[in-house]
Length: 387
Image 1: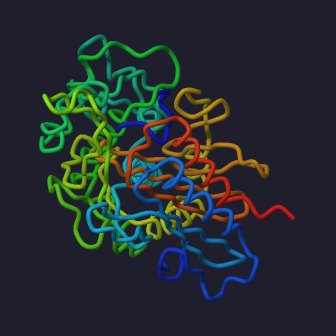
Image 2: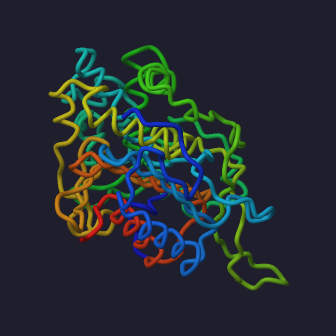
């Protein structure tokens, strides 16, 4: 199965989040692609057999609409709801990049400063040299560093979900890997290092800085860093992944596993946040609307380079913590995707007209067709109905 950005292992001011399948009172009749979008969600849980899928769409002209399909909890059958907290995976990268760019705007660091300037001696093994890697390259995924997630790809799942990782341990694991090919290479290690740069510059953890600079000012009440906790606080969906257990009774038969209890310290500053679609939509609107960054730094963030087609598709591009992809209705969407080994997957994006959408599913897709269907649902959410 090819590695799509949505599956990469270690993702405004709006009204109240609505129950799945309901529409905002302010939304006008026939405003939005709601029927087609609901059909797309039902396809994810029907044809592609994912446990649950939810979406929140916010349209400047039409208001807020939320939809859902499937279940949040396979055991109880509780319906999937957009109100549920989920692990947003690599959407975390956009939060971390925003803080780094805020510090650049404040003159506290330069995007062209090196890893060595901030973290002397940390990246100086395995043929890698922090003196030749800039902060900009970390955020842009052009540092040439491998991804520590690859070092954990074959780890025992039961060990991985309970293990407590320190950021420097993740960096060390990456530096023992072979050098990736030339050019753009997606690596969560880049963002672990960016988090350590934030700590060096501010004297506070990246978690504290994201909280005080973004989460608290925007009143993202369902967004938080879990630290080493394995449980998700408050109302949340369960998450599921498929694995093969080789026992006397099950000879490699795929088995659905509940991954809800999981220590996501392996994601760190690049993948550990917990949130809801509503909070993520609010964050993306504030960011792209210029409320979190001055114009100069936002322009830097939105300046993109071609990504790896195996990760981002043939026309996907990457900025400083932002992905862009073409829309079927013209223009591009700007946002990020996020996934976790535990099973939660999120994609959030804004269209040129200001329409934004966040989709969350609670089971890892096991086929390219399922992963593509998630992105197709996003396209449906962001494109106006054809008339």
